[in-house]
Each structure stands twice: as structure tokens, then as C-alpha cells.
Length: 111
Image 1 (cartoon, one colour):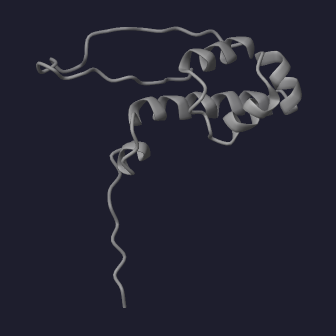
Image 2: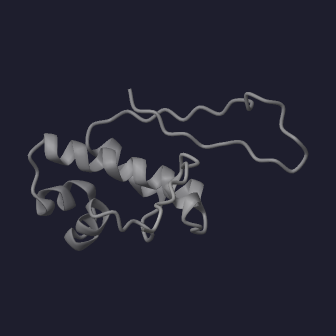
């Protein structure tokens, strides 16, 4: 019998599978998920959502199906604002002192 290997996730599936720009992809996935939740909660059709968001319906469909590579984070934030959400962006020092050449992290928090 073949043994099943279980690997612990890093917390970012995009990094785990080796995709380029995993942090950006995770942020976009969280934003797209929230956009989809709001569209559902407001009982909007994709066409209604497209008109409200100012984007073509096929692009809304792609976004809701997790295909968001062609949609910027800025556009996603604009979509959330058009769906009646306030957006606050907070820039602060990293929790740990950054090592030379290290980067901070980007996190999306929904209140």
C-alpha cells in the first residue's frame, strides 16, 4: 500500500505550490472572496454587479471564479468601495526588526 504524505501548509497555498508572487495572489484571493460574499449578500446578478463595479460581466465572472490575475489590487479595492465598504490602509513598522533586504508583509483584515 502507498503511504499518503501530508505536508503542513505555510499558510499561503500559492507559495506552497510554487506560484510567482504568492503574497500578492493571497491578498487578491481574500479581496475576491469578500467581493463575492458581498455580491451574494446583496443578491446581485453578475450583470448587475458588473454595472455597479464598472467592469464587463465576463471579468466579474472570472473574478468570482478565482481567475483574478488580470485585475489589480487597486481595482479590487475600488470594487469594495463601490459595494459600500470603507477601505482603510495602514502602514506600520514590522513586528520584528527587519533584517537587511527583508520585506514586510501584506495582510488583509475585514472588520
